Image (cartoon, rainbow, N blue to C red; front, side, top):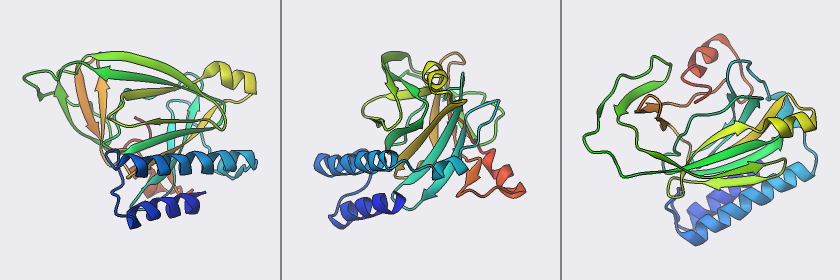
Length: 230
């Protein structure tokens, strides 16, 4: 599936299109169709090779980098029941959220007016944190959606922010310990903003991974704590 998508992205670049949430609508539509078709074909064929990468963590959800190139990254995310991400952006990248097993819920938010007088804030003492600012914009709920096996949701920063959580009821019904989703970000995301309304701050963090292309070793595990969850 990665090679199929790599060809689709390369074709758009060859046509002179820049990859990202602001690329021409017709080009973005072709990529959207290509991602959805590739995922649906993969699930319909009953592929299970992703299970070799699907490792869960009791404390937080975890991100596993399947592969990447300069155009996009493919990430497997494992959510135990009760686990969720924080509200976050996508740094002007496309985000396709595809579910392989169980189910997830996507909570979308829009923000109020940009606060005046934004100032540096005390950043949380967590790996991968780069900076923090305050205040946090007002987060206004913009809808909740459910995504099940073979389903795809799409979002970018021009649409909304979002948070994702395990759909516990769907996982219980399927007899799964949690949900597994496959995310395609284009281009790869190197910085993400976390909108923490309770702490009244916005934190900038470098995303990380629990495993990279299935590799786990001591050095990589240290690097993964640059945030294998958000």
